[in-house]
Image 1 (spheres, one colour):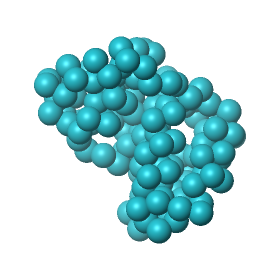
Image 2 (cartoon, helix red, strand yellow; image 1 turned 90 degrees about the vertical axis):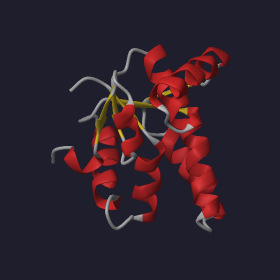
Image 3 (cartoon, one colour; image 1 turned 45 degrees about the vertical axis):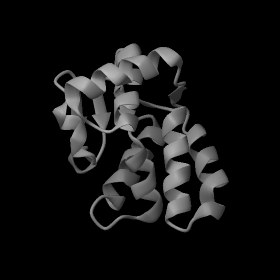
Image 4 (tube, helix red, strand yellow; image 1 turned 135 degrees about the vertical axis):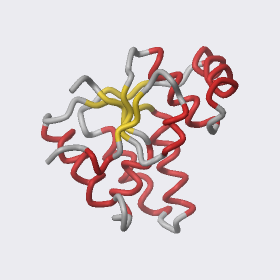
Length: 138
């Protein structure tokens, strides 16, 4: 499997052990940590995870979770102005949320075509493939 991009919900659902996705997201992160899955993410993901934790009443968990994301040994891409401009174009084409458009733009800039995400909105793009966390093999 080529390198995949991890969406913020993978980290968040693993952290809160979401009923539908928690176990599979945790397995995805274990595979990344062990080197069995080549993955990357972005600094924007860390910000989204921090915000989701805050909204979920887990603000005290934010520093440790952000450190955990950066400790997995995967590449963490930055978000730059060209990504934001590209995200606006993706928004017009795919009609998905602005944050998801930014993730797609970061992926495009770095030549990634697969994202592990529970967010079905990514299915609206015609050039990237969303992999449901539950579909990742044992």
